[in-house]
Amino acid sequence: MTIKELAAQTGYSVGTVSRVLNNHPNVSEKTRRAVLAAAEACSFQLNANAKQLKQQRSNTILVVVKGSSNELFGNLLEAIQAKISRTAYPLVVDYVDEDANAVERAVQLCREKKPLGIIFLGGNRQNFLSDFVQIELPSVLVTNSGLDLPFENLSSVTSDDRKACEAAIDHLVELGHRRIAIIGGGMGSDIARLRYEGCLLAFDRHHIPFDAQRDYVAVRFSYADGYRAVKTLLARGRQFTAVFAISDVMAIGAVRALQDSGLRVPEDVSVIGFDGLNIGEYTVPRLATLCQRVDELAGRCADILIDQIEHGVAPRHETIPCTAAWKESVGPLDPAKTAGGQD
Image (cartoon, rainbow, N blue to C red; front, side):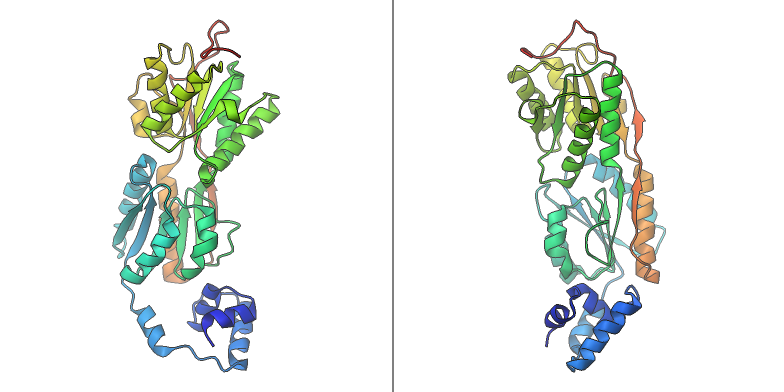
């Protein structure tokens, strides 16, 4: 009988059964008793050679970064490196494409690098559901929540994306804006979906109609795509007085596209971004944004992972609020100014 067959018989995941058989502390006593009883009943024996090979781990922590040009993740990685540098654990960093399966890549790297634990900077929920069962190591997902994912070795630290995006739309409405366009990501991205949902909640509360086919452009997280998104909105002929971009890089590209189209920011169109990147302080105008607390996100994910590695503590799932920074790119509506063409 294999571990997979024993897992199917007991109803527990392969990872949970493996942790019980390897005497891992991060398992409930009830689960431990049930798995051991089933193993004894069918005379299951763990392959000693395989176990020994698995235990030959390095002392490294693996960081899998989703997107090679994500500036927020660059800042997070720098803060994580500063935190982990004060411990005995060296970091191994690996980048995957924005649309790639970060969990599948981590499975491969676990075989090659044999780390003690993993930090995921970004990751798709569906990839975790399909592939994370192959990972038995303590892991922390950063910027996405793993709260309702069915894994006993996965923690998460994330910003409150939905609430922050509600606050962005609320602020625009308070300034008189009702014709608001959104630049976001594809709905296959958990982050894009949560931020989009936050916008929709705010629109609904304020009784503002929103037509996704007309007022939403889904693009990748980049300056160039933010630029192209605004050009697309203008080409549609839709009138708008404000743009909310779900990342700062998109927002900065959007500002440039508006200016290249003869529109002033914020006099003609207000723009708000998301992330709080340092570069927004040096754009013209300075970018209004929702700031993610990078040092806090990095510090908590590092602390949680090390606690799991060294003490076998239970997984934790923490949500950290964003901080609004309403800078120069957002302003009150001038009723005489409306970007775009027809309503």
